Image (cartoon, rainbow, N blue to C red; front, side, top):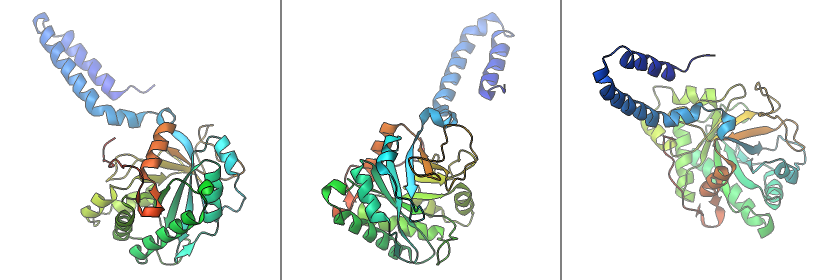
Length: 306
């Protein structure tokens, strides 16, 4: 078993200071050691939390869908198997609407599931993309009757390398403009989804204006990595959602990482970094109620430390 470096350091310090030094220094050194240990413990709390196994602090309860998922989704079945929320593609290039979004939103709401929507971004005008996205989400929400209308909609920008649709890949400055437009019209920033590698390569580019990262840090982070637990990319210090499998692709072993749910055999499943209660609070605080183009619950700002 590999020795914890911090424990080993403390062991050596203890040996040198309490075994080798004269007795009259014991009390002084013990006090210093106690203060040092407390300072290290307090400052390391965020890192120690992140070092815990995902299963200790996480909830595998979110599924994302799009028109590529051709089955008739069993939403009551999703809920019965522990799923709490669904994030569905609402719009994609070039200014198209996901044909399955409306009916699936209504079915999910009737099943008592939380609802979210994402837009697949490209390299065209980001403000027009944001307006189109909100138009699709708002129209679907207003068309539903009260029994099939979600209380609010969690909004997400799909910021990934575009190999599916026309228009090229969205740039960082365009993602910022999209996020700012969403905040301007709804009162809150959207989440940002991307593959971990693409996010790291894009935001790690030294040519990226630091002001762009300042804006993006207001968005919550959703990363995809099918082979390992992702590490957050600056300006974030942790992720909120982790997509660990999609289309049957997953290199993680064990029952903690199922690849199917209900009648979706090759599901896109996601882990939330927190408890089920925390997931519900997170979703409700950040969801948009389309009727008034403003958030429907007071939102606590996202900070860079956990």
